[in-house]
Image 1 (cartoon, one colour):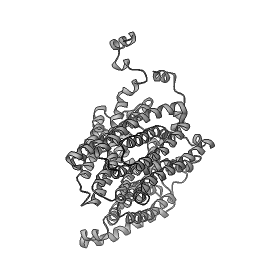
Image 2 (image 1 turned 180 degrees about the vertical axis):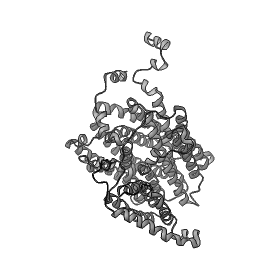
Image 3 (image 1 turned 120 degrees about the horizontal axis):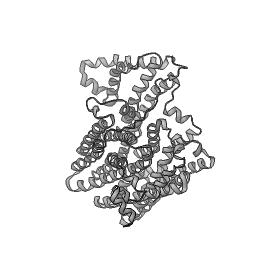
Image 4 (image 1 turned 90 degrees about the vertical axis):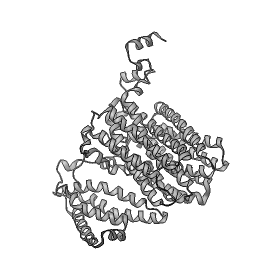
Length: 571
């Protein structure tokens, strides 16, 4: 042992014997981010590959199985109810702190939802399985909101980069452990016990909150309190159009998922936007209480159906008509009444959407975000169907897809960090996009070869390695697009947009495409679908749009590190 290390052992802490580059990863807040990430990742696995495997083993047809990918839309809609977590204080339990109390409540809710999903028989109650999967998706997405808020406020500014990396590692660990644990337990004790065992993975985040305490660093943001009539009217009038299209798609797919997701996506913003619109015309923001009975009546009719509601209420069903009429009249009045706050200081406060779309090339950037993961998402959500049809056992899937894939992804995350540091953001993002596109081609090869452990290892290893690199480089770019005033909201919106098209296409067409064209052609198609995003980002680089569209978070990140930071990062 070197003399300096001996002195460190005598006079310093155990961290002093570690290389300087590793010490930040062992600090309490980054370690807390690791455990928070574990709990964040496991609900996703429960309604992803694990549920796909379970449904496939129960003989559910591919179209119905892939339609369950629409349950992931809860993660794409979580921005809609995120303000609730920031604004509402839980009675009594809230005394231990805003973030910690929500961690406990939502953590328990996630455990209950996962347990419920595992104990419903798909053969006899596929509709109830869909509802339970939606519930897990909503609770898991809400858990993400709470965890992200707690993590950001827990980490000091100089720890945000390290903490984000540790959180990503934790997310992958949670998803991998949940996937493997579910398969192993299900093979021996059944799916019910498998889901109960996995539900315990919500505890790391809850225990982390209890141990670390309430964060002392708070993020204060200025949000708009008013809304003019035109955007509010567009929001209200777009609901029947979106809901009608969702109902048609649900009937085509023979499920009831997308229509419920549209309802969820509109209900939560409705309260906030209605209160802002009411204040804009001089009314009280508490108008939501007057609209609540009407909204409950409308939701009951949309979700359960007119016949079911009238059957429950009997003669009292006649009250539904005036409730709906009152709600429609109040909403219409809000849509047509002119603004009364024009020119005031408060009316000029812009929200996250207005700020983002006021930037140069914002629509092109959004198109890239929507396109770049279509092929990757479309392929990833169908891997378990391929493995089942090729005859892989649960143990083989656990070893290669979960085990080998996990380590390949960790290696990709490490290599992605190196590439990002040496190549810069733009070149590393372009390379990661190409690698993720080509990785889909490997599954076309596996489908052509058939059942082969070596083939599965190669395909899974390459795909996860490429995803690990993309998980660092592309996510760093999305983070750089955020404005520091709206970091959480911007990242929630961008991360949702990055996967919504792929998940929608998977839920609506993947099963039918596989049945019509076969696995080989399907994965060749996903490879081609990935390249429009590659070419668009290349054009954005050449035109300089990547640099011009960066938000204030990216501008801060692009500043050279201080001298003491460079010394601390040196090995």
